[in-house]
Length: 112
Length: 116
Image (cartoon, rainbow over all chains, first blue to last red; front, side, top):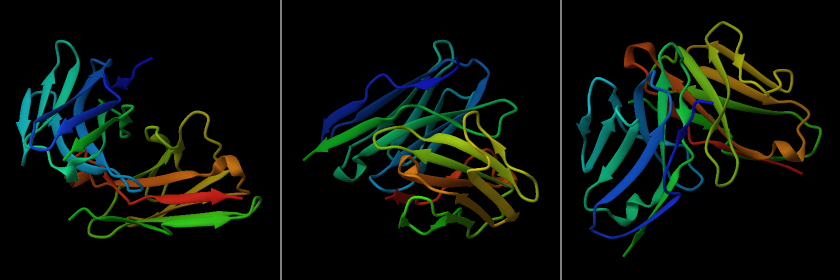
């Protein structure tokens, strides 16, 4: 069935390095994508979103890249900090649906 | 802006009792609210979608008579876990969406339920 999945369950980086978290989706009708950050025991926090008519969007220290050809989404975090340690989820929305479909999540561990 | 609260943040109850969880959008009117369940080290699983003033739409496999959802106003939705059992222990998270803000969902802090 259609799904959104992640390549890496855990990513460990050194403080100050750049992080790249990847996500694959299978539904070509998906037209809206969001990255969320979830810290332990808390609800997901919106990071950045992108529509399918774009291939790149930048925020503060974060960049989302969308490759519709291979149905791939990535989140880049510049100068990763200890406070960035969390689980990151990608989510997608299909045309006509109100609910998001979440990927399985990637845990980012930032080593001091 | 776009703050969503949940109450309580955690609850412990005995098996067979019912538990009500509230989800509120504090600074916007939520035309649609969503309820998710999350087990440890797993992703969020959508349970149901609710629109203000209408019946909730449940995902496949979610018992509507066990998980009662009420969305009586544009700022409040409640989830009642009826006759809770230990297997219902989980992290329940709501999210809210406002039509004018597009498709972005804003999440509450979650409610941890432990059924003994």
